[in-house]
Length: 394
Image 1: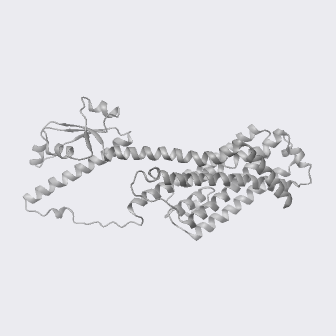
Image 2 (image 1 turned 120 degrees about the vertical axis):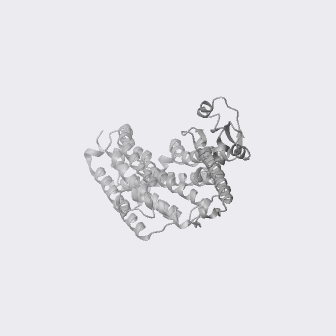
Image 3 (image 1 turned 180 degrees about the horizontal axis):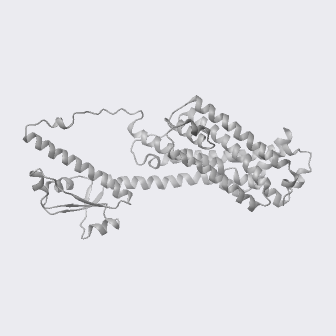
């Protein structure tokens, strides 16, 4: 253990002497994500505000209809003159265009179908949001017409709504969207950092040492190969954990300064973690980092050069992309099959924890598999480190 400790400290010192390592492993995740999510949050907030407070539309009302007056009276509507609505919507000068025919009020009075033509850009986020707002106005105006018609016929308007819906949600209305968005994004990012975090260190401590010619002298010392392996493995794991912690800190800062990026512009939404859930997520990330770190070290030892190691380690990054499964896993009703698929099981449990679900059986299955992954990965690294033809493969 004393030799392992010496190797571990030596490798860590070498890593932290390299300014590129500190920049890539700590500063980028710590600073980059608040910047990215800051801009993202501002963009989302800007889109929501432009529709909620300043919706630019053009209205062609040939008959000066009452519906046209109703729309124009809305406080968030900003009327823009347009000679070519389709072109202006396509170019983004307008969010929507409304065309109301001259016989609109006549058809309403005669209880006939009245048409409204809406021009939108269905590839634009703002235009689709504006479409939702206008549909709400059309629905409100339609209900008003129906109510008036029923009163004229001495019929109670409540006959059209025989069912009254009372909605009770498990989360506060504003908080639910934030948790859902976080459960889609955070597992994916944690998995990707756990997979990619150890790669740079593993490449340098394996193939990098081969290329520099420093591995052979290290093997001539009294330290056994297993001591060298454990020292390098622990150093790689430590760097991976530091990278993941820097990422979590960056995300936490992002949630504070730009909550709009996570709750899709919903005002008043509160984002946060249960301390127990956050601790378990941290343990899962550490265990994943250990498994990926041991695997990366084994592959790096096998490679002839630094460049070759980078090529061989590229698939590990793709394995981390299994975190994208968070987009289709529904944790409350998911199949047990997901808990037995590598990486996907970690994604599923992290998603549960974000939503406040603590399932002891799921946690036990995941941690059992994690132990298996780590043992197999370390076993593979030990096998590679014990082979002369691998170590001296140049």
